[in-house]
Structure formats: structure tokens, C-alpha cells
Length: 121
Length: 506
Image (tube, rainbow over all chains, first blue to last red; front, top):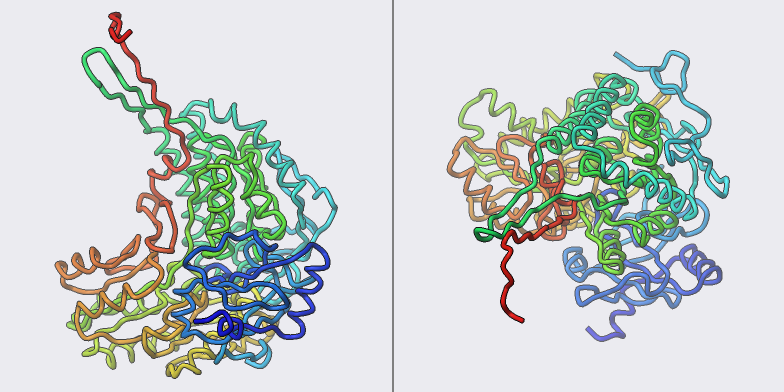
């Protein structure tokens, strides 16, 4: 896979872009690492850039608003290599993740992931 | 029976409007004076406010822990065991209060907290009281005049980060061995469940010397890192998800300190055709064993979330299981008849819902549930999801990812070899279940499955004395066993020569 192809695998909604812009303005660049599960996982974790050491098992899916987005390559494989969309929702930031603004956290919308709201389910 | 919701006049649980951090045996307000509202997932309405702490509060807790650690570490095993037994007695004496508080904050049915979470928490303190009381140092006779003495020493002050799914039991799993081994602890409870452990502190706070147990509530992004990356801790223990687990190892690497990590799974539950050989108690137990995916609303790292059923019995066995699933009672977590309560948070509910949609999109067949549950009444806004069963293929995302909800992914296998292949076709390796009347096969399967625990003809038992922990990306270290004392101890070796003669080298 070429870098050009990688950059097409993740994008952000306007709400997520707004949150990233605010985080950058407040404290500098950020990075995202997709989490695989357990006790509130399966969420995109947002850290200050360089906070999380990536390694050979991590795959760069692309950049959103200039922020790199990584996922464990084995996890991505098991997902069937979907295109991902970064969004925000009300709720706690999980693990050690930065929040996406007051009372908001980042979430991922996969394809063919549903985007239904809680009320609509 | 139905327990009254905490805060109501007739409830067994008293609720203060606001809770501070428990530091150095006292209740201390957060340095920045910020609090946040803590909700019950059953109603989506507030229980109380809890401290929204910052790194300064972690530093205060570490000050208190460091002040307490030397004396606690030097206390005799007899003394420490007596304190842990007193903690266990206090937990037992307040079983109903703690069970109702735990149920109301987490959403798990009170029948589970009364029968499992709280009694098991007490038992873990007793187990480690016994283990430390019976612990012996070792000596090795290297030669006739040289002896190696091995003594256990506490690490000092440890950081412990607790998940939301068993807020009190997971705290007991971590706290009991740490304290038994002579350490002081700073605990960060999970963001959705900060309160029940503060109720525990009300019960046991006076039994422990001040500073031995410290609890700081707040967001992981603020205080989780402040604790895990702190140069003043000698060890960090974490239960949660993999990315945070990696981050914690990274912080630990900076200070060369040990970690124990319990990081989740996607556990297979395997049913061989001989379970249907007779219509008896064992068959009934196996059917219940499948339905245990809904235990604690599926919010369990070891949830048997992949059922592998031998092809020849699939229709009959699944029909019995679906009948049992259809009779699951969902509702008020404080009703002892309720079997499944609400998910812990709105975002957890949303996540589960998304996964079920992903499953549908991948072509999985919905055999049961598949929607948010309408419980109605005062629970109309609660975060309830129907017990759900998806039939599909192990390559699907719903078979590979931990959904952390009452969602079972079911598939079939032809023979033992295929069962092993599917069982091990996962990144995780925490738990597994094997159901068969054939003891030889059970043993072979148990050895072949790459998981830290293989429940055989049972599931979801968590007794102290059975080691619990993961293979592969499911973690490092073991809990609920006396080997945990090693995880919380330093080894001191005194190598002593009783020979008066010089070595003769110089």
C-alpha cells in the first residue's frame, strides 16, 4: 500500500475537525490511535502527538486535520480494512484519551458501520 | 424483592450530595474544587457528584501513600492479615448496602452483586490474608558454608486503575494482594463508576491505617496518566483495553517498573455434540453456560461472546438456548428477579448498537434481540439493550472484536480440529469454555486453546485460588492467586558465607 492510498482510509466529520482544531489551539498537535476493545475500548484514543509510541505492528491510516491516525494492523485486517470516519459524541473520553471538548468524546464510524443514534435504535 | 434506589428514605444506601477524594484516611476536596455529576445507568438520572480531580490530587494521594508505606510494609504478616480479615468482615457486614450501591451505579442486577461481587470481594481479602500469613521465605544451601536467603519485601507505593464492569470486585482483586504484600495503594476508579468504591471506603476506611488506601476520582486523560506515568509509583496494575495497556507499559518503561495488565478478550464457548446425549442436568447446565454471555450485561472481559456449536447439534441446542434467552428478565437492577440490567453508559449502549448494525451489514443473521430494549416506566431512559444473538462466521468483525454488551456471536464447527482453529483465530487469549461429557476431549481442548483460563463444563466462576490472566494481547500477569504476591513484592537475596577462610584470589 502506498502512502497516498493510506491517506484515503480515514476522514473526519465537521464536528471532529472542530474538536481537533480546538485541541491543537489549546495544547499543540494531537494523534489518534484506534483501540481494539474491552472495558470501554473500541474507541479512537486522542493523545498529544508523540505521546503514544507506535511500532511495526501499527499502521498509519492517514491524517485528519494534520493529525496522524494509527491502528493495529492485525486489528485493521480483522475489521476487513474499512474506511473510517472520525466523529464526536456526548460521553466520557475513554482510557487516557483527551476529550473532544466538554462532555464529548471521539468515536469512529466504520463502513458499513451503522450511524444510528441511540434513540433511533 | 425490590430494593429502594439509593438516596430514597427507605434505601439501605445513604447518599451524600457530593463525594470528595479519600486520601490519607480523610475526605479531601479536589484541589481545583471541580465536581461532576455521576449518573445511574438505570434511569440516566444523577446519583451524586464526585470529585473531578487533577494531577495535583494524585500528588497529594501519593504523598499520603508514601507516608504510610514504610510502617505498613514493616507490619508483621500477622498484623496485615488481621487487618485484611477485618476488611473482609466489614464488607460482609455491609453486603446489602454495597451490593445495592454497586448495582445502582453500574447497572448490574442486584442478584449478581449480592451473590457474587460483594461476597467474592470479601473472600479475596480473606484469601490474601491467609496467603500472606502462610507465606514463607526460602533458603538455599549453596554449599556447606554458603546460604542464600530469599526474603519478600513490599514494592512500596503502587498505582491501580480499576475498570467499570466490576468496580468493587476488581478493586478487591488488586487491592487485597497489594496490601497483603505490604504496599500502599493509590486507586483510580473508572470514570462511569467512581462512587461505589467511595462507599466501600466509608466501610473500610477506618480499619486500614491512614494512607494505605487512597482513592482519587476523575478523568483518565487527566489523572490516569498522572498516576501511571508518575515516578513515585513502584508498580502499576491496570484492567482495561489494549491501547491504554500499551501506553501504561510505555510509561512503566520510562521508570523501569513492573506492570500487570488485564486487557480483554473475545472468548470462545465450545459445545460438543455429546452435551445433547442425554436430557439431564448437565444439558441444562450447558444451555445456561451459553446464556452466560448475558451475565453482567455482557460487560465482562471474559464474556463467552463467541459460541461454537458442533454442527450436528446446532438446531436442537440453539433452539433450547434461544428459548432460555427469551426468558431473560430485563429491568430494575434492584429487583432480585431481574437477570439483566442497563449497560453502564449511553456511549456503551451506542457502541453495542453500532456493532449489531455492523454485524447485520456483514450478513450476520439476527436470531434474537438486536435493538435497544424498551423497559418503560422510571427506567424508560435507562441504557438497556436486548439480549442479542448473531449467527455468522468467525471472520466477521462481530466475532473478532469485543463488543462488551449482551451480544453473542454464534457459529458452528465440524470436528475438534476445527473447533480449536476457530477458538484460537483471535488476537485475544483471556478465557474460553469447553462443554463435553468426554473427559479426555475436555483435557485435550483445554491444553490446545491459547487462553489463560479454560473453563471446563462451567463458566464465569471466579474463585480466589484459581489464577486469572491472559495470553496474547489479553495481558501480562495473573490475578486471584497467591502468585499475585510475587507481582507485588521485591525479592531480597542475602548471600551469606559462614566460611571464615579467604577466597584466595588476591
